[in-house]
Image (cartoon, rainbow, N blue to C red; front, side, top):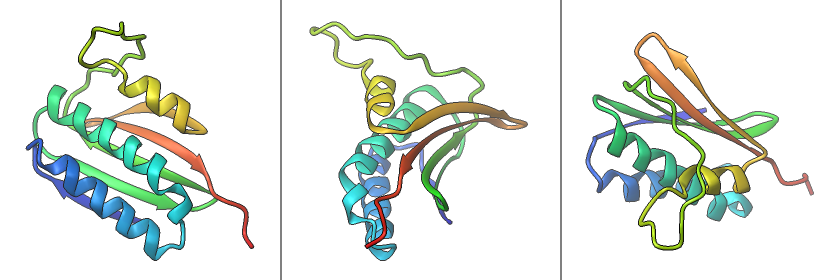
Amino acid sequence: MVSWDLPTDPAAVSTARTLAVRQLTQWGLEELATATELIVSEVVTNAIRHATGPIHLRLIRHQLLTCEVSDTSNSLPRLRHARTTDEGGRGLFLIAQLSHRHGTRYTPDGKIVWAEQQLPPAN
């Protein structure tokens, strides 16, 4: 497991992607880098846009790869189908397509949005 505290600054999204890919490379999970970058981008962006306070990114490698982002908001993200002219609204739809499972759980200080990916088969 590895975790990082991120500032509530849009520039943190790029930093979060870089940190996640670097960690996947260390774990030998480069195969998951593209999907993980998109998942991290979406959940960190949502936290920056819709929450306040500290944002925390955590990657957990166990039987699956879990990406978690915690923030201090208690509002649940909603899956919706964006129209072709919408600027946003595709984040959770992308996460649903890229992950094995995903969800949100409340904490005493806010919530955690998580997404799980299957690990590639061992060689």
